[in-house]
Amino acid sequence: MAGTEKEKPINTCLKTPEEQGAVERYFEGALWNSRYIVLLAVVASLIMAIGVFYLTAIDVFYTISHLGHYHELADAERAVLKAQTVAHVVASVDGFLLGTVMLIFSLGLYELFISPIDAADGKSTASKILMINSLDDLKDKLAKVILMILIVMFFEQAIFLKPTGPLELLYYALAIMLVAGALYLSHKAYEKH
Image (cartoon, rainbow, N blue to C red):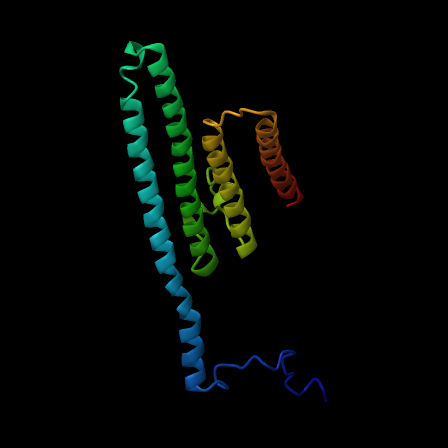
């Protein structure tokens, strides 16, 4: 007798389209399609990434153009220009990393909410950092790049730090040790995945 009756699905919450009302189908369709609002964040993040890359590239151009007369300077002026150039180079790395964060964020949001990026599937040249499978995956990748930005910012400030006493030197060493610890813990967390 059980074989002749039509078996009901295990999950009774799921309804066939015939069992759903027109209002319910319309509402669920509108709710599902509301995910496309994420495209605003995707496009805005991509534009910001391009903007940050552009600004940083212009800064790199002007930094290099100021080095043309480096060999003509006196020793003291050369030391000042060298310190400024190193600071600009570090700031440029920081700018490119920030642009990378925005790019990863843009790609990750698109893949999570809209659709997998077909051009990246199966490509051996596609970087694993751009492959986002979950919100935690996106968060982890962004956290790593943000950690690198913070380390670069620390390095940028540390270039001009000249400890004058033993306590300042101890603080400087502790700060370096904390940065190294953060890198170590980040690497250990990555190995677990």
